[in-house]
Length: 117
Image 1 (cartoon, helix red, strand yellow):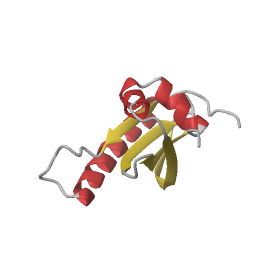
Image 2 (image 1 turned 180 degrees about the horizontal axis):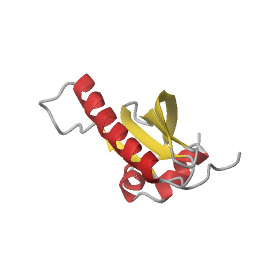
Image 3 (image 1 turned 90 degrees about the vertical axis):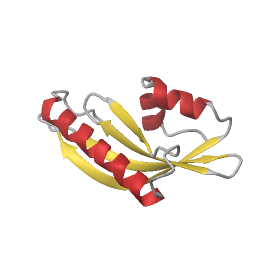
């Protein structure tokens, strides 16, 4: 299964996510429900989603992903698996907090008109 277009476009412009996805040969992305939406000054939405990269060898890599529907700028927030001091819910909460802060700041300044379609 190929990556959804919205994720392919965002990955292409963000090296951090591109290196994560390109490190695996078979990746299936399962979008999860929207966590939050922020309205930009031009009327577009900045959407926060949690996605799971389902790797071919059976492990899942969760991530929090925010993307603007106006300018298509996006940001990826890792759940920081290297931090052994945090539990899975704490890692998720930390990524959500970072995504919300980025999304709010972006929505306050983005003047791109919402994309059609």
